[in-house]
Length: 261
Ligand SMILES: [Zn+2]
Image 1 (spheres, rainbow, N blue to C red):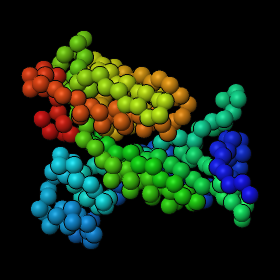
Image 2 (image 1 turned 30 degrees about the vertical axis):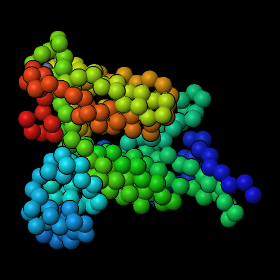
Image 3 (image 1 turned 180 degrees about the horizontal axis):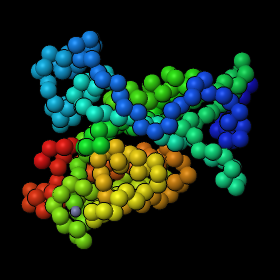
Image 4 (image 1 turned 90 degrees about the vertical axis):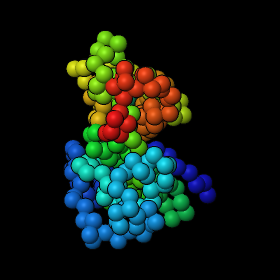
């Protein structure tokens, strides 16, 4: 028997009922109860005891975050949102964009559907994370995506690399940067104040969560693959911090890392 995986056409996929209604828009995380939190990892214990007091102490040393509580405890004002990764297959744009990417796996017991979703978390001020979650059910897929987004949190390097603007404030990106995932490449370019985020809608959400206010995003390749496009955006944000900048450039470009000078 052939076991394979196929992407469902949107028309068919929409017939599959998800087990819950997903609220649209940004959701604010419930207040984290640090007192009640029982950390399991070494890092978590250090955060709980107060040995580690900032997220930068973790991100700068490249420690792996193993539990979401670490991020909940250290990053205030964390918000999350689900990103649209479901592909519209309608020939005339008929299919509806969805936060779910549904696949069907052919097994000996029959067809089994699975749900995948992508979540962004961030504080709109220098910290953002992206997480992919997949499960047979929608609720665990969402939970997995949210947890992974927190574990994948990165620090954003911001600045003003726009020669038209040259305001030395961190409202944009300090330099041009690219991110690539499979055939999709996304380039972020500095933009002057007041430009806003010029990007595909879901890419714009990630950039806004990261705290970037003005930027041009230019995508190339197979951009219909939303998941790859959004992952390419996250790669570009990671690459921002890898670019070597001289001390003098730090000042001229008004660079901040995370939300500190
Ligand atoms: Zn500027």
